[in-house]
Length: 451
Image (cartoon, rainbow, N blue to C red; front, side, top):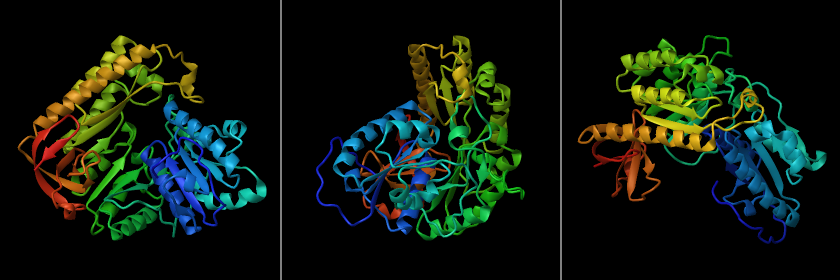
């Protein structure tokens, strides 16, 4: 759903079509939720369009993890205030995490918003749009069980990979995190519903699925029937035509030996684990409410690599958490040096209203936060560059995913871990969606180049 307008255009006579524009902010789960919204709206007769000026309904699927995303949404709403003056029939909906967290403020500050729909109620969006004409502005942010998704198909763009939510919510209550407030408690989807969707996706030409959850390795706990992520992986692995299975994001406390053994044993499951460490200091981890210490995290790394020496580990880090000293930051640097992650996301701490960490003084200066962030990112890129150079001259197998986003003359794919590989396109579009062996010839810190 590309495109945005910077100024209010003029409009002609009202149209009889029902069209929707959705702009998605934030994580892959939000992307999957937007696809689900489009699928449900499509079943109700709505047609997606590429720009808001074409739309009868504009939906912002929002994120609250970072203030930057919320700032963008406020800017969009400012523009749409003028749009609605010119076209009063236009409907505006705020969905997702920001809607869940700031529903009262949104309704108070933004009178042009017709619908506020939370992370557990977006499946009702077609019904809410129909009701708003009769009831006026609607706020639907209650938490509930996983909605009945039988017979409902998300509207996805064509491609090789499909995002498949298998659970929502989180029970861990990390002190910096808004997810427990915006997504609620853990709830898992029935395994047969996941399998039905994946089979349908493969029939439509998708060759890889990425299973999504805020703590995806906790999948199945709420079902009460012994289901877990390892069982689900084994169930999906036998689907003919499915070439790769990925899953994100995991919590160190829920990475069981059974799950590691299953990932190691199943050829289709990516040897790639996204398990955020967040910090290298035990004191900071306790303040974050992470429920593990540095040694426990390193034991997870040892357990994973003992079973899969080739496994690629991805981490998240927060620098500048309240009270973090220079020495404690150096412990995080040391952890990164010791583990040598295949990739890492590094964030500077920012206060998120409503989280327990707001009670802690945000006492690390912004300049120090940025310097620590840059140091950690530079070290990560140094490790990636060194690891990539070791692959020069070697053959790797990739699932070809399509044209490179930065160079239309190249195709790109990913290894069974998560290394991004590009190679000359030159009439090879027929390789998209297939497994290919390529030889690495050169690299950067972010990309392998192959012939």
